Length: 430
Image (cartoon, rainbow, N blue to C red; front, top):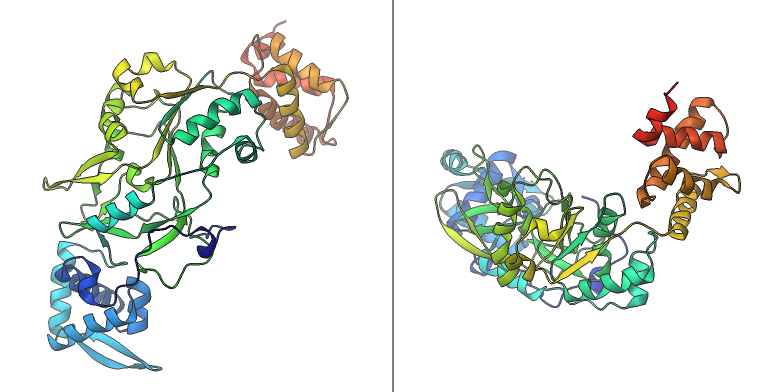
């Protein structure tokens, strides 16, 4: 779990701040569930100190001690010794049998969850309220070559914090732009490790998606992690199943759907329209959440419940939005930003930036020659991706020829022939 650098708990903490629970009933989840998790943890680890349980279950010392004392009174656990000044607890025979029985019901033995009410509250309190102007948006996208006219269209769309379409011909940076939208956020949010619904466990915190701050505060309910706002991208692998709760049939633990993991952040659906599931079905699934900012999920045995839908969904596609969605859906997506091919000057700037990143030197005429070759050999106006892709091919050519990384006109022609199918066919003609 890699901590997020740059922000600290003091500088970026949210206004809503759940304090550490002092008593068992302040956990706001069923006490039998708490007992089950502690029993399973003790069964897995054998003998564990109170401090160890506190770290594993993310509970304050006073609450851990209270649970263990109750287990001791019920003759389910006993003190096995000391670890420094700390008591070491282990299960009795009766405790091991009960833990095994509870293991068959559910195998979860991690950080204690928060209640659905607490989760809903924290998400609602953390709705994004960004400040954005020309200077800030230019900083957020400074590593891309984007003209001010485009940024002036994108800026108000991001300020609205409503979902949007990024559309336009392939290869002009829609994915790169979508990946960087999360940079406009300057604050941190609280994400619980897990959520309890009807005594079932939904694992929410995902170390691949959620980036904890470098320092975590001490005056916080330890069942939460202070993180940067999440930014999650999915593409052709997106199916309707990923938008629902998924229960592991062996562990009986639920995994949160992607929109729940992306709450209070950004969810990018890349290459929209290329998924195995039809765009119509996916868009129908999104209509209610986008309109009312709520979503409904179901447990495996039919219990349905409501969760907040406080995220920005970005649909990135090279298909015209009107062919993907009807008017009723597009009305719920008021922001549509076109991402077109670069101008000639922008294409040259993209090439210079990519050549510098790869430490490629070149003759003075090379940048404009590349633009011309893309037009004549590729039979199209250059896209933004052409410069980076051809620079990569040039690096491989120089490596193959065992020559310094310097671009010459013959090498550039050779790279273009490798890149464009039309040029490759012409190169092999007699």
